[in-house]
Length: 203
Image 1 (tube, rainbow, N blue to C red):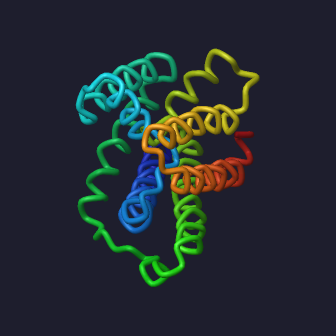
Image 2: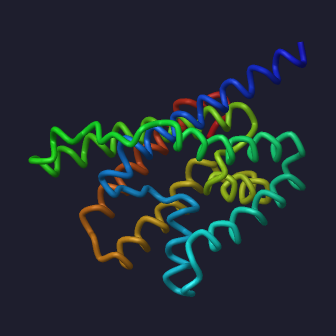
């Protein structure tokens, strides 16, 4: 029974990685939408410090994963590490196709649909990961660590604050208010989807 549970856990968190890869390769990459996340946070700190984004991502992700493993358990750490590795592999296997390309002549409609569909995919990915006691390796890890110390705070509210900060800060740095606004819209869709997917966990 224990092994069946482990197999099911890894099946679903692999699905989570695939959903994230689909959102990035088929929606966010082509439209420029970036609803928060560790990458967005890395871009902000990289701009401030001139440290390359790849190094900054490692500098943020590795300590977070170690801290999460210590505080939230070895199983959490291993599964989160798996998802962190599986997601970029899925991204390399899934073709980058702009599924909203046909709407390019109506930019606002294209961005709206991209925000909704991308938000649903990422929100489902994060929700599935949380349901199986791990994280996607993004700001959800930070949110879970904050919730560990402040248990009365709702995870969805922490995520909204963290990723909202990243989106707004990115908008200020890039000076692209339109993309920033739709990125925030995508974030709202993500948060609502997480709430629905993780209802029994009271996200």
